[in-house]
Length: 297
Image (cartoon, rainbow, N blue to C red; front, side, top):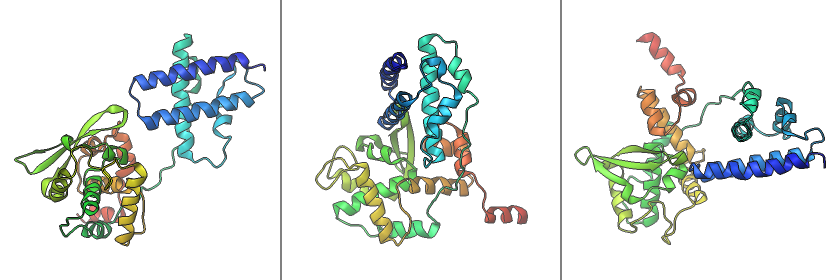
């Protein structure tokens, strides 16, 4: 095989690159993504007849790899390109190439598809919360209510919600607000806040059944991501909401804050976004009602 030497090099780079990411505390999901993309790229090089050394890896080669799955979404291709750019920047450093690959791929971009994110309407939010309007002694009902309220009122990600421990929830502001420590992407910590009266009953109930994670099954085991998804989906159906997914609650919280004209930097910090531009691009969109109100004001 003409590219055997290249494949041997890529093998070593893959291992050392992933080890570096693990050392830097990249999340499990991030590591899984890196592994998948790098393995796919490696197989692509194996099957290639024209790539026999590092110098042969051009923009055209990267584009051919990104286009080898015609049905892959734009977001998937953007993610794969980001992984490869990071990977080849690493190779630049390891091989002392003076940024050859970084410069070669610098202008290689894929235009982002900007789709309106789905969120719950005010009526749908009220219907969902109405399921928990009466206090209950049911473990499942209190746990489900606590998880849904934390997701809806704080905007945390599903993985972040599953990682919340009771010890990370404390009262502040004269005991009127719960402050929750969140272990976000890349092990970055931040805090989110929820009014005490919004979750106090459910939180106290769960405290009587566990001293560890808030997301547990009725057999006192940690809830999985699938388990959380099922909880949300079942409650959505019960509230006659024809929408699904855990992330929709995060989008709803962000939309609610935008509607209240909360500073975008504050929203970005609460969501744990690394860049305020992402917050603005995703949520700061005016609707027809906003435009009409702007003219009449």
